[in-house]
Length: 87
Image 1 (cartoon, rainbow, N blue to C red):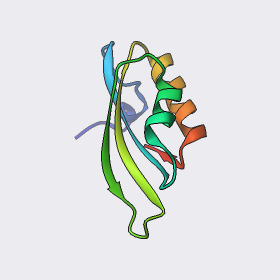
Image 2 (cartoon, helix red, strand yellow):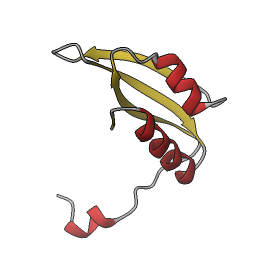
Image 3 (cartoon, rainbow, N blue to C red):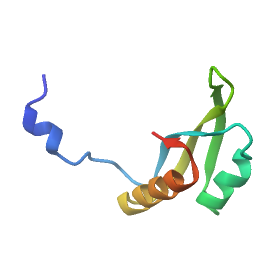
């Protein structure tokens, strides 16, 4: 069982790394354009996950090759401004 102090440690992530994000967007949003605008020239993989129960949203798994913590967090922040939710 992990020690409570272990939860405060920064994770040890080796870079470069394909970091995975779950993005949730409006059903009418073009996911390819949105992702291209956010990731630019970085290598990435975009796979459909599912539609919401009421059909208003769709979700995707997005894996992006990142080279540092800063790049990973910067991309997360950018995705948050363009998507309904980012996990």
